Image (tube, rainbow, N blue to C red; front, side, top):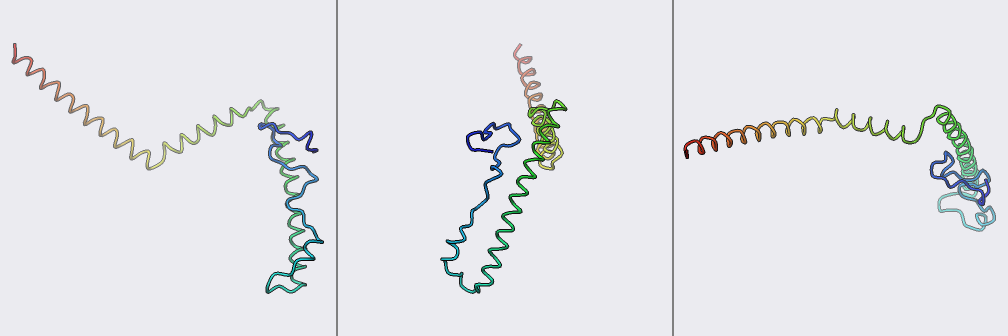
Length: 139
């Protein structure tokens, strides 16, 4: 992917992916040769660590390419099935609401509010009865 044609569509399955030609952190071997080895490392140990670092960075690049291909394939499958990002959002919200409803905190809060509502209802009923009697006495 060239920078001029880079996909910046936020709904794209390619969002946030680097071009295939880019690497994580370029290692300048000339600059690394000029720096002294960190304390406690021999030159051989430092070279071994740098080789391992280069291998890991290469693996990261490969994994990014595989992930990008999988995300493109996933997007194609969703498009063929007629699934939209809104469908996914609805499903996530529905699952989240269900998770909230089955949580202990929600159940305790619901129980407490239910009891408070019953007590409030009883208190208002009592006030209504008292007022009715008082108005009845005034006649």
